[in-house]
Every structure is written in structure tokens, then in C-alpha cells.
Amino acid sequence: MSEEIKAEGSRYAHLDLLRLIACFLVVFNHTQGCIRLYEYDSIDFTVLVRLFIAMIVKINVPIFYMITGSLLLNRDRDYKDIFRRIAKMFAILLIFSIAAHLCYNKGNFYIPGFIRNFASATVDGAGPYWYLYAYLGILLILPFLRSIAVRMRPNDVFYLIVVRFVIGAAIPMLFKIANSVVDSNMHLALEFQPAIILVDCVFYPLIGYGLDRCLEGKEPSFFGRIPFAVMFAAADLLGILALIIAGPEEAFDGFVFLMVISVFMFVKKSVVKSRHRADKTISLLGSLTFGIYLLDPVIGPFFKQLFDFKGDHKQFWSSIAYCIFSMSVGGAITLLYKKVKTRILKTS
Image (cartoon, rainbow, N blue to C red):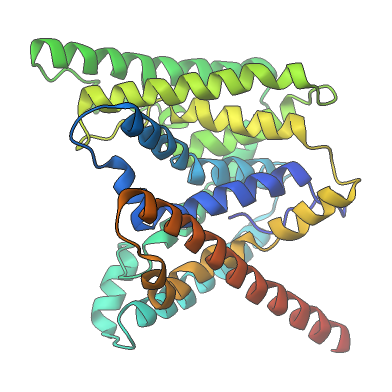
């Protein structure tokens, strides 16, 4: 949930559309309909469809990481600006963690327990806010990420993607296949830690910056999008295969980064910088996603139960309905807040 998407006084519609997609998936990820997607006894076509959707949900936070990289790494920032952002984000995290905790526990609030859980990102009701902890970490190393980003060239972007595929997806996948055949426990050494490649909150911001700034493509074209759609579907299917081999109790997200890159580039090639009415609408809605994300854990305890219908199909669609409801209510509150804030600033 990066701050306002602004560049030279305008907004990037493709980043706003990505924010809307990711925000919806984040809200859906915390519903019963999403949890039930992983529950199955045997593999059939319906289960494969459910797992295909479940893999799509996993792209939610990585997309936000990429947007963050595209926006924060585009220019040098002094330490004063960085610590101002850190202070602001910490205050937002604290305030909404308290609000979500109070709503989740129906007004009960135990201060020592909250302080302990706040430090470890385990506050009851505030689970979705873990991304803000990661965002604070990104801000702390922002000058060093910027030093890398400013020197990145297209070959560097491709290098990071290829190496991530090899050591983060292909090799672990081969190990899982081998382990299932010979009943072993082969894995990469824990001491093998190329952080820029394997740590999500470092890799995705750099790739987001690289794909959005270093690889300025041609005008959007239909044929330019097909390879990304194919890569998305292939990565999703490989993710399902890995999940089936490893078993539902062991998550494997090695191919998710290919899905994230595919969606990012597909949308980038599909949306032109704001010039049309549709783009302006997308940008308006995109500007509300941070508020929607913050308000959902506050809204959820009061309204999720109204959308909790029993049965696989009913629960899935009722969760979709809740997401639309939560985003509508959260978006309306955020829009009202922005208008009131703007009016106050104008009169002050």
C-alpha cells in the first residue's frame, strides 16, 4: 500500500488498476471462502479450479511490493523524508492496530498483551497489517535499494528474474519431486541466502522499479500481452502441481513471482497513462485502496458473519460479495475523509 501514486503531478493508471486488483485479493484472502479453496480430499476438476483461484490470490501482496518499488525508488530521498514517512506509517499502523483489536475483541483491551503482540505483528484482528511492518523495513533500507535501482539496466532485471526462477522455483520444484519419489528431505542450505533474490520485500520492489522504469515498452498491443497471459497460466499450473506433490499442509510459492510479473506487465501494456475518463475513474478508485485496506479489519468483525453462508460454492460467492461490500464501504469512508481533509486544508 504505497502512498499516493503521483508522478509529475499526475497518476499512473496502470499502477492504480494493479492496486485495485491487489486490494481485492488482500480482502478476499482473509475470508472463509478463500480458506476453503485449499480444502480437498481427492483431485478432480473442481478442486483444480479452486486451487487455480487460490494461486491467483497469492499475488496480492507481491503486487503491492512492486508498486512500492516503482514509486519509492524513482528518485533520491533524503533521510529527513525517509524518517517522516517512517513516523507517519508507524502512527497509522499503531492507530489502526488498536482499532482493529478493539473491534475484534468487542471493546476489550489488555495493554501489556497488546504491546507484546504489536511488536511481533500478532495483534488479534490486525493480522492483515503485517504488510505495514514489511513496508517500514523497506523504508529503513530505502537509500540502499535506491543505490541499486539507479544503476539497474534491462540485463540486470532479466538476471534477477532468471536467477530467482532457477534457485527459487525450478530447483526447489525438482527437490519436491525427488523427495516424493524417494521419500527424502532434500532442500537448499539455509545458509544460502542471496537476499536480493530470495527476500520478497527486497526482490519485488527492485523488479517493480526495473519493469516499470528500466523497461519502458512500446505502445500497448494485443499481441504484446499474450506471452504474459500464457506465462501467468503456466506458472499457476506449475504452482498447483507443486502444491499437489508437496501436499496441502506444505505451501510452495516458488512460481508465484512469475504470475506477479505477468499481471504487472499485462496491466502495464493494457493501460495508457491517464488520458481518458476510464483511466481517471481507475485512478480515483485506486487512490482509495490504502484506506480500504486499513478499514477492512475494522469493518470485518461487524459484517463478515452476515456473508458467511455454508457450502463451498455459497461460501466462495458470499466471500466475493463481502469483498465488494467492504471495499465499497471502506472506499466511501476514505473518499469522505479525503474530501473533508482537503476542505480543511483549503480553509486553514
